[in-house]
Length: 515
Image (cartoon, rainbow, N blue to C red; front, top):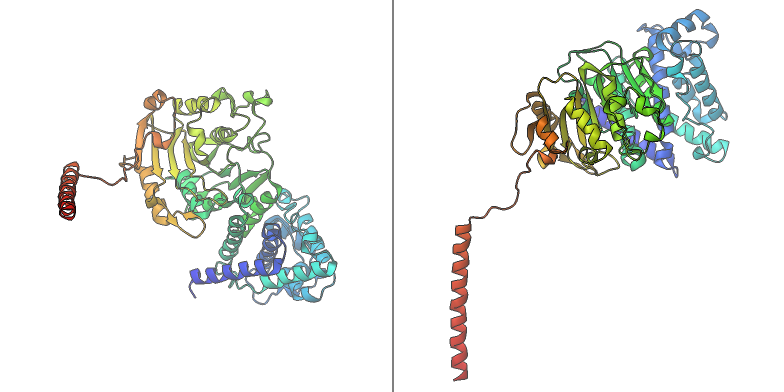
């Protein structure tokens, strides 16, 4: 079986488990139990693999807990960030799940123990609360202990039966892909609530490539609105053959999504010392001001959400917003995220940010911020994408690419919204590898392409009231039917002659009848 076929089979089985087991529970509400169980199995096997160290004579799952010395535990936590006793491993819990009358409380105790094992160690903030959304006592699982245990056992047994292959043979990729597959499907079927935190992989791939274009080494990668971590993970995949010196940084305001992002890091084999995901409001309480600058920033912030803005008079003095001389409107925080990203960007790097199109042509404070960005030559490229690429919204969004190392006072505009830049799938449109490649080629060479790409002098943009809408500079292809006026006139003349002839014939027939 090819890796693609194996992955497809695995994904189909996972989705089947998720749908069959949840019963009457809403899929969006139930996602935590499936995702949490998948994560529990992963860290159990990952930890077992670490302890055994490839020694086939060692079977950690069969070890008595009492044989684990404090030294073994201490060393493991320093390396892996957490500790799991043999009795707490997924394989041992799943083995007796169907007959364990205390399954829900046992699982809670195990999750608490895994999290608390990191207390007092550098990994504590990365491990704390990982299982907070896996509530084994939730009424969503059932109204009685028996019904809760039955559903938990069904999920455990279902995940147990999944074949991820040998751990050393890219099991990590399969786990990670399975996790992202579940998240994307839940997001696709949950409307707005799901789409708020998941950027489709194909869009993430384009954003990551834009942010890291022609960089063979970056200090660190940052997403100020991290969601489930999909953009950061695409960055990891893009940099498989490159060097990431200090790891992956992100901040997320939603607690559930914050947990998903941290789990996702582990599932893609990014150890606790290589990622730093913070919980909190990026605009009001940024966590990484002391860590900046970043060589690569990727982001899909929420579109046009409300924020405190000028209701907080101190924010205009914030070093992220002060240079622009104005704050983003209270009702539309889009440019607040843009200015935040710009402030955290290094002099050699790029930021690639998904934006709501309205910010590029609206007046008021947003126009003043565009003036600041253009006059200081920070805007490298704006790319308009096709509609219906994202879960939960049909909006045709744009990608704003910021740079602090431009050599020309020009801004590039790319119209990638046409049918030649997407593939229609069941529920959404999709960017293929060829679409991404073509966009990246235009981004790289900055050559004008009729009806698709054009570089404009910033002075022209200034004359146009700092309008940054792609359609203002890239002329759309005229797809209307073309007519040769001479041929058309000739056809009309022939038709008129035929009509005149028919009328004459009709008049002649009428005269004969009347006679």
